[in-house]
Amino acid sequence: MTQKVDNFKTRASILLIILAIWTFVTICASFYFSVAAREKYLAMGNKIAVRYGEYYPGRGRILDKNGVVLAWTEKYFDLCMLSTPQDDQLCKIILAQIQKVVPDATLEPSKDAIVLMKRNISPHQIVKLEELLATLPELKVIPREERKIVDYQEVKSLIGNITIYNGQCRGISGIESKFNYSLSGKSGLYEVMLDRHKNWIPGTWKLKRKAVPGKDIQLDIALSEIRQKGAK
Amino acid sequence: MKFDREMFSFESNNNSPELTMAMTMQILLFVLGLWGCMAIYNSQTLGPSPLYFVGKQLLWLVSGMAILFIVQRIPFSIFRENADLLCLLAYIPLLAVLVFGTRVNGMKGWFSLGFANINLQPSEFSKPFFILSLCHFGFKYKPGMKRFLTMGLVTLIWVLPIMLQPDFGTAMIYVAGFITVYWLTGGTIWHILLIPTVAIPGITWFLLNNSYALKRISGFLNPALDPLDSGWHIRQFQFTLARGGWMGTKLGKAIWANSYLPLAHSDSVFASMTESLGFIGTMPVILLIATITYIVYRLALLAKNSYRKVFIFGMGGLFAFQALVHISVNVTLIPPTGLTLPILSYGGSSLVATLFGFGILLSAASIHDQQPDNQN
Image (cartoon, rainbow over all chains, first blue to last red; front, side, top):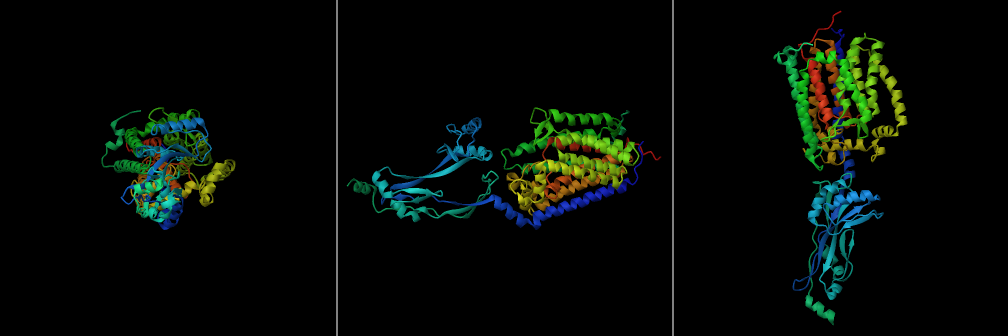
């Protein structure tokens, strides 16, 4: 047998009312952030996460008058580590994980800001590295463009050199410099969200402005003529 | 103890309102559990294995529901008559975990079972027995200071090992349980007001001696002051809610919760849900929790015995209080406490223990082995 509690219904009802009022307050707060002040907080969040970036179209090719390609661009991807751990043991553990995908990658403790682990990794390896890239924010795949010229000294002199400036090829001498504007094309603009490790969040990439590819330049001289001139 | 079919009461009177309410509650709890699974999946879609957490949670939900069905069929008189032994059995793991426990998220509050990556949190399973012990002392003494002090001492005994873990969120739930049971057993408001007068100097002393806790409070009060450290969690709650808007970003598209929100599948599951389902989409969750709480209230009123009335409402009150604290944290009304949203958040211990608690609650609400109150 139990002693009867006086006014149980009243006491329980008071607690129920307190819980109901509390629930109402939480709904109001949720409404404030989700709806009423949404734009303000969205803008603040976007400041942290949304980034805009330029992407450069492929540089145009340089052809001789017969359409033979004299200069062209090839894209490669390098595996790099930003801020390498100073601990040798930790380096070995990380390297072991990476070597499961890229067997000949290397990693030594270093104070350099960026350490090259492996040049020219394949697209297949990049796909396989996706999980590691998400968990190891210091690990990066960095794209790199290389300008190739047919292997004749005379042609190389005529075509000239390029340099990489802010990730874009820029002609600094010869035809590369003279026709730089046409060969470069126009950069595109994209928007992307980054996670807290500064990795791209899948599915958030948006094109804001389309890139205009660089134009091919056709010279009024044939490859054989360039070589003959060079020989003289 | 005499066992007969009558004791397993919900089966024997198909038209009783208790039966209807108990069945409704079971369905609502299961629906809430499934909703939780969806929320957990949603918060992990960008992770390396999106189905890992939801798969485990679904298994815990099915196991928890099975435990609920079994426990609700145990006559409540068994729990009541053996309260001393049961409370002792529930209390020992709270002490043992301080010595043999595993540290998770900075708290030494878990037993690692050593297989299938399963951890058990004793402070979750001891909640019904804590309420049982409060009911025991609440009805042992007449209303007055002696009862208040005794129940306060009992609460302190339960809360102390939890605070040593340290798990202040759960400790707060226990204190709320004490206030609820004390109030329901006829306590006065003046006695209850003594609690903050004791607690406030204690909390102040704690804050002054623990810089991380003080930092957390300052981060809550002014997240703009240090948005990358102490204000980080608060800011992420706000940004996640803002991304939800009215209708949300669709299921599986909780980008912010996946990328920025800490513990999106457990301590921050309400905010994570808001991002996907929007303000409108979270209303059914609040409605489900409110309906369960109202059913608890109705079951407590229908019980013929005061001890059971208090136990039923005390248990349901704990559930509602924890849910409201979680939601309040997620909508940045109060500082982060590390509490999960019962039934919905990821965590086997929390889910199974809550359903276990509801099993005892439904056992207390069964009508057949109830003795009426002593009218004297």
